[in-house]
Image (cartoon, rainbow, N blue to C red; front, side, top):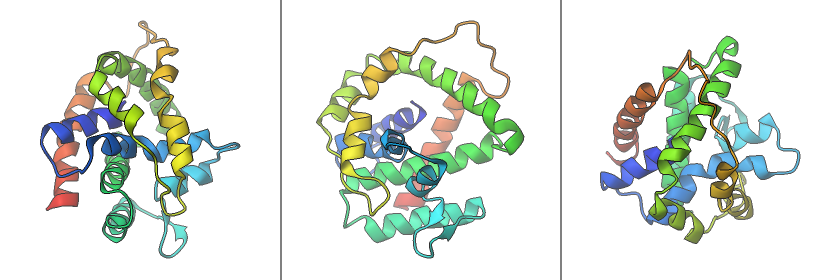
Amino acid sequence: MVHLLIAKEMINRNLPIGNHANFYMGSLAPDAVIIRPNSSRADNKISHLRLNYRKEKEIENFDEWTDNALHFFKHYNEQIDYGIICGYVSHILSDIAARKKFEYTKDRAVKLHTEFYELDSRLFQILRNETIIWASLEESSGVDMANLITGHEMNQAIHSLYEQYCYRISNDSFVFKLINLDQINEFIYKEVDNIGKLLFE
């Protein structure tokens, strides 16, 4: 849900992100790889551009990951639907920023994943009645992304997203220790500034 909130804020700020429906689709697309049978961490690394798509080697640091994402954007932004690739690369850049801000070390990763899962369920309640977002996702159509993920996988994962979240139940007694809603709201606001500078200036 954080990615949808970032996408919504980018649209509200009138950033040049192309077709809004496709932009929303692209902002979720890297995670759609989970729909793939026997999806693995390697699939996730590929879809999230954590493998250098030019040199076919693993990314070693955040700067290299950012450079890989920006090069991908510049190389493909006229070959792939512009709205989708804007959303796709925005997703990658926000993941990089989140790993920096929330210190995704091996010791913290599992706990952070658990807390983000619960936070996601709560953020869905905020977005649940955002009919424009859900209608946009329904009308969008995925595209094949340069051997990273297919349009069919995007459609299959994202068109059913609302229904998936409706079955998730938030745990009101859950205690957050590493993140909180105020931090996430601040992160979203600042990350939109960061993405705007990296992609459009």
